[in-house]
Each structure stands twice: as structure tokens, then as C-alpha cells.
Image (cartoon, rainbow, N blue to C red; front, top):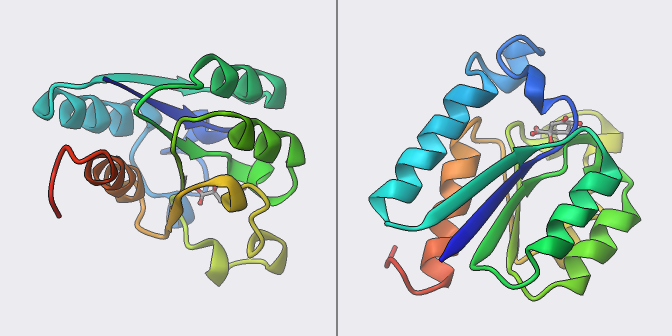
Length: 146
Ligand code: DQA
């Protein structure tokens, strides 16, 4: 029972990058929380960060039939039809995550082109957006009841 978390561009800089928007936790700290959650529910969790669109697409393809993908496409959210198509091409249910509330920011961030292929979006809860996304997939897969 595998779940994959994909962190998009510049999320490797979390903690140092605009902390007033993205919080003080580093990517490693967030990932540790996610690994702990996976352990709690005895499922496998792989976490990858990539600054490259092609790499993100390859990762989605490689995980075409797993229990769930949690993706924060970062800036690609707003214009990557290539990532949208990759999500559409796989069976795996995908939840889109944003640390900030993309609807409360610059107008170019209000539109997600990738969300359309996802089962849902969680945006605006800080690092907790990732945890909520994991819970939503567990619930979607009948593993927990919310
Ligand atoms: C983000 C929001 C995007 O607009 C931005 O480009 C990011 C992070 C978020 O998690 O809030 O890099 O996806």
C-alpha cells in the first residue's frame, strides 16, 4: 500500500523561503511528520522533491497504480498542462496540496490548471495541508473513517 508525495519547485527551500507565507518548517521536518503518519497507518510512503517538470511527470507515470499521490506542483500549478495530462493519464487518485491559500494571493495564483485532474485540493493550512491530504486519501481508500 504505497503513497507518494511530490513536492514541486523551490519547496526544497522551505523554512528559509518566504516564511511569512510558507511557515518556518523545513522540508525535512514536514517530511518527517508525513513519514510518522504513514507509520501510524502501516502504509508505505515515498517522498520526492523536484524542481523539474519532466521529472515530476516521470514520477507520476511510474506511480500510475498506487494508493494515492499527494502533489504540491508549486508554480507549475498555474500553467503546466503537461502535469495536468500526466495526472489524467494515471489510475492513481491524486490530491493537490498548497501550503498557502492560493485563492487569497496574486491573481495569477488563483487558477490551478492541474486541479481539474485531481480528486480534490487542500490549500491554505500550512504544512498541515499535506497531512490533511494524506487523511483524505486514507478515507477515500476506506482505510479510515472521518
Ligand atoms: C504553493 C503556491 C504556489 O503559488 C507557489 O508557486 C508555490 C507554493 C503553496 O504550496 O502554497 O511555490 O504551491
